[in-house]
Length: 147
Image 1: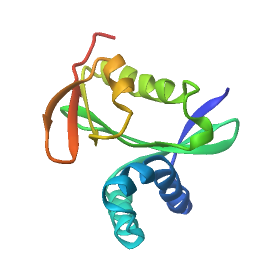
Image 2: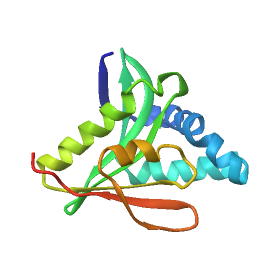
Image 3: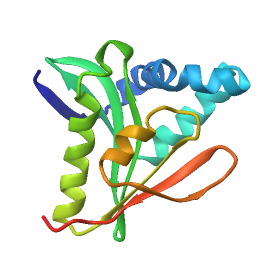
């Protein structure tokens, strides 16, 4: 499996929304229902705020991620993989690439996820720990490891 992360372009905004709906939509819908207008507005705001990348496998877009390097940390998010590509180690490979970047720059890595999203096991396996929470999200941190 040939994996590439490429910078998202303006024309990727709809694919990114579809990847989000596919990956997290069932978790959102189970709690609140899926409000298309609200979710599109939220997506557009995050699209403008973050540096997005498209996850490409064998030249086919299969997901998204945002790896945002800040002076004090690497912020990992907007991590959505289409259903047919989940459970094949792809998420682990994308996460490890981001963690290697953080370690090289001696930065901690931060992320958040919906409390009822089963992604927790992936993050726990890679050294993340919950540092805070609210009603909806867990906020996690992984300290930098020497590269």
